[in-house]
Image 1 (cartoon, chains in turn red, brown):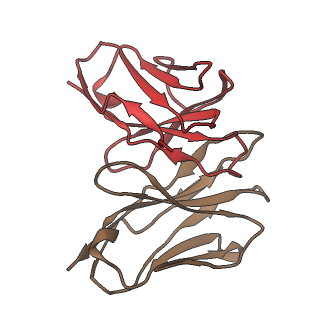
Image 2: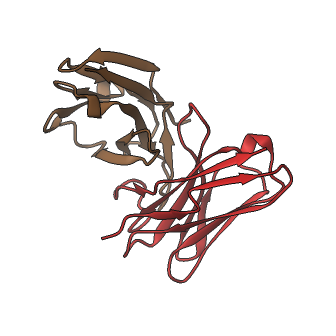
Length: 115
Length: 116
């Protein structure tokens, strides 16, 4: 079975632009979470979606938004990009959101560089 | 507040040495889960283990073993007879409390370098 997939792999954007990152969960997984990992740090939680509804939001500005589609894939949007948004964006999926009772599997990430 | 601390920023060992990665967590919950992930240079986080707060039994999987001690709020990870392929950044994580959430709180990671 295919794991979590993310696209694109790499992205270079200019300050002020907007970007959309995509994630497809493991088949059968209905919960998708997004994390931001700045170089040298651990991943920081951005959003979680389950059954197309937002189930959790981390401490990120409103420039960050996300959505989940009927096939459980997800998009993360970031508007008005800042240099500080440069990071590896990771998507994770699990069968259900159960506060850790299921392990989460991560995709390879999208590396975003803002110049 | 919930928090995960990995005090070791970087560890270097020579192949075949044993190495222990430390993880200390803070939570007021009685039910929680702890995780270890491996992040090789490719960037993808690879799941290693999940442990719930009611199971303090140590676990061994091949060269990997985990020691969970609630009394000291620690969940340490030991690699026996390390190999070059073990070189990676290792993250410890804690599940956030709350109903039906998948949020994980990660430590800052420990970079392990295994030299031949």
